[in-house]
Image (cartoon, rainbow over all chains, first blue to last red; front, side):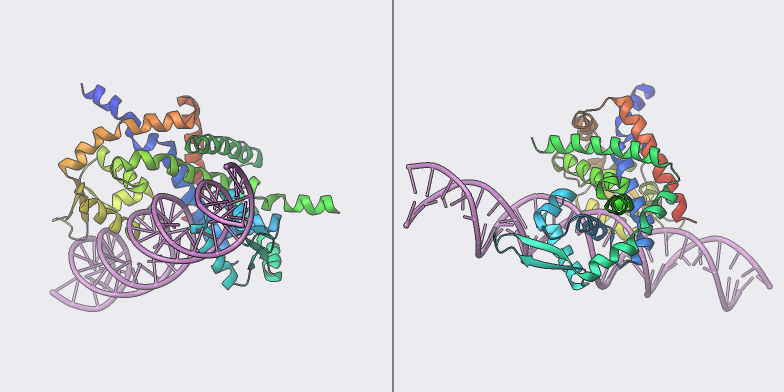
Length: 153
Length: 153
DNA sequence: TCACATTTAATTGTTCGCAATTGAATGTGC
DNA sequence: GCACATTCAATTGCGAACAATTAAATGTGA
């Protein structure tokens, strides 16, 4: 009886939840990044936006949102803070006045050099080999994409 | 030259970041949980607290924080909202007046039954076998624990 | 052309998440 | 027993994250 009760509870045990593993790992990453990003004057979500812009500059807010799975409610104030920090410039597109184009300032471009040491520090903190991390990353991305597919239906 | 530049940029590419995989997977989980937890009147972090309490009742706030890696700045207002929703009761410990003990109300206990269908729905959404999920969960937890170990040093 | 739908950002309000500080209770070393 | 440090929760302030709404620009069909 007691065993049956326990068995029935297994799916509700915290330690059995992959979602909590992911949730708590995300927070752990955030805490490791914090001191590294403090030196760049960035928060972690701001760092993600800068990664997108360092790959391609002058993109619409919407494209950044699709890349990072974030909406304008999150990005508009975040980008205003990056603009206040002189890292980006926000301008309305002339072809389509609905779009806001995000461009790096020279300071925003220059920050990329200071950011190059960050991934190495994270790799060291993870205490993993690169192939291990790549394999894990691919599994997690595949899971994320399956979850996102369910949401869209 | 161009190839060398590209190679140097690889560590900064968004799609190569395991942290972004974890970050975006956590948000994807949150979005899948949202409609399920709405029916229980819980947010995802509140659901995590309830999972802890359904395992063991009457625990100090601090213990919940250690379990979930959250501090009083997050938990105090969250628990006040759960108390306002009549799911928990907060009482100062008589042995140690610094501690606040969190106990389930009858409604809080009863909610466990309504929550039993949640893990099944998540499993379906993840479109994975249980052994696959368990393996992934263990890898992610191991990574999280290594990251947390670095923070504590 | 004109009514209507769609797209895009911005805004508002609520809830996390955390750093930093405060204040009360408890533990300690002399 | 008393000064001192430690522990614990609460508070404040800021930056996400997202739902819901608004408003402006653009696209579409009759």
